[in-house]
Image (tube, rainbow, N blue to C red; front, side, top):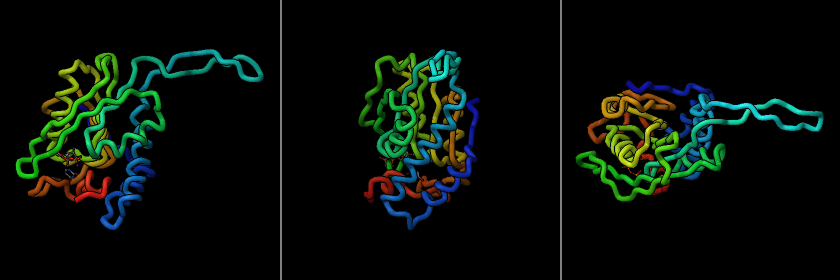
Length: 209
Ligand code: PRP
Ligand code: URA
């Protein structure tokens, strides 16, 4: 069973509060989601392994550390996942990015695919699938299905806010995937929105309705 990690760092929690607030406008919403993306990337990469290298300081040799091991990959679920992407790339600018385009049918909540483009060597990479919202879990499960079909073997899912229903779906379909969140909320409403959540992440990020 995949583990759930809720990042309780005060900066993440503070910024998430203003992301939730209905009066926060598009510009500030986008900036805050970007900043929380960076902060969550900092937390999610804590377990990256390090290897020794020697560098020369102006004073002499220093046995130091650099990140070792497998290459990383980022997979934003379009379109709201794009809101977290740049914030993560600020910390890891060389990471390869794959895109999975999905939209959720407003009546059935079923995800529909419209675009997939992934790095070729996906099977060699540790992937982070990103989407601000994990509601019914349909979109995240489908996105992880797609990347696994292309050979991905190591996947983490990072979202701002999840509902218990979505977490359970991902854990059932993909028990090898750990889930990283800024908040685990109470429930879904009858329209499949997370309560209290933040509303429609894509619309708030891009100023659509
Ligand atoms: C939202 C959100 C997730 C999905 C979550 O996307 O960004 O991808 O819904 O819901 P689920 O867990 O029930 O599948 P949406 O379909 O609204 O598309 P958008 O990102 O293009 O706005
Ligand atoms: N998608 C969103 O953007 N928000 C929700 O609460 C649920 C699905």
